[in-house]
Image 1 (spheres, one colour):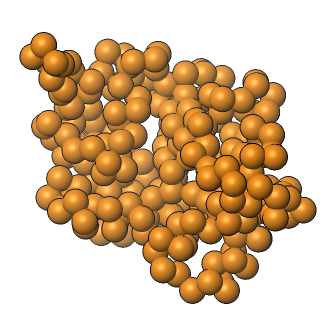
Image 2 (tube, rainbow, N blue to C red):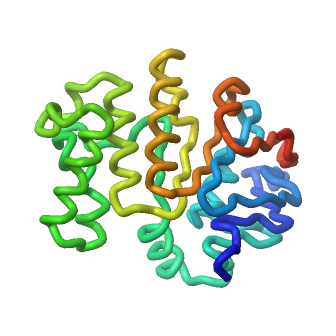
Amino acid sequence: VRDAPVLAFRGVSREYRSAGGAVLRALRDASGEVGAGQVVAVTGRSGSGKSTLLHLAAGIDTPSAGEVLLLGRPLGALSDAARTRLRRDHVGLVFQFFHLLPHLSALDNVLVPALVAGDPAGPAEARARALLGEVGLAERAGDPVQKLSGGEMQRVALCRALLRRPGLLLADEPTGNLDEETGRAVLDLLLALARGEGSSVLYVTHSAELAAAADAVFTLHSGVLERTR
């Protein structure tokens, strides 16, 4: 269906068992969606279930109850291999701690998803260089990422996430490891690039101020998801 949301949670709960057998409810009956081209923020304190929500959205984790739909496809009904393929082809991930390969150049880090997917090298490199140019790092393409600042590393991570033109960009505290000013600049860049590409975005942040940049805001409190704007 053309107008189906890019991502939808339908009554999703996620429970974990502790070593002692106690049940920990990370998410309780959560419902919400991200429409095509929409930017949605989720705020909440540490331990409120934000990372669990993103792992479920990416199909890295599966719900204990309810359904997560990515591009209209219920993730729980897919095999691990099919979920991995869907994530690889349609989801871009940005993390708080960058997850870059320190000894590789900025350009080679951006190219990792194309390598994994077996994309043709020429067009992938042209795309990677164009993205690095858009974030002001054209001159640093050949530098090892360990020589870059935190803000520059996060910009490289953003280019990597957007390389294969994902329909959905998931960002887990993408500014959490940066100072306030750099964090704001990186978030503005992330949203501008994603909107320019037509990608939908779901980002989690503990900052109400950073959440205000989104089209819609949800708050997570003790595993309960509530739309607050």
